[in-house]
Image (cartoon, rainbow, N blue to C red; front, side, top):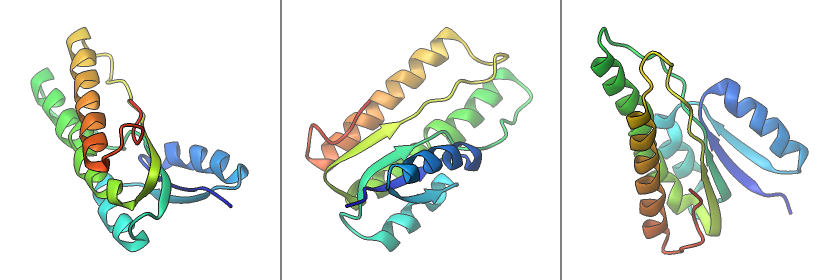
Length: 141
């Protein structure tokens, strides 16, 4: 029986992954905007997916200062992953897998502190998903 996989992220990133998954006889639901993950999950229903692969989203970083650009990146990128994950968890089958893929910031605003901060936020995201799933084996991070 094919595995049902929900994949979200930038269209060019999810297209490559979806192609590989389909070659492995998976059914793939592609969502190219994190804001649309809740609608896709509602349409699919509870226990619809065997896995959720959350790729980085596509958006243009805006702002004149490094602080403005970092704020934009976190709000539109990292923190936007939380509502999408919240919607995806009920759509996963028991024992379903979650994989979150990080993406680096542009060199002009990336710092060692930013890398550590994103790692910490992704750990928080993974632990929250595990707590909501009620299954310690439900999420990877």
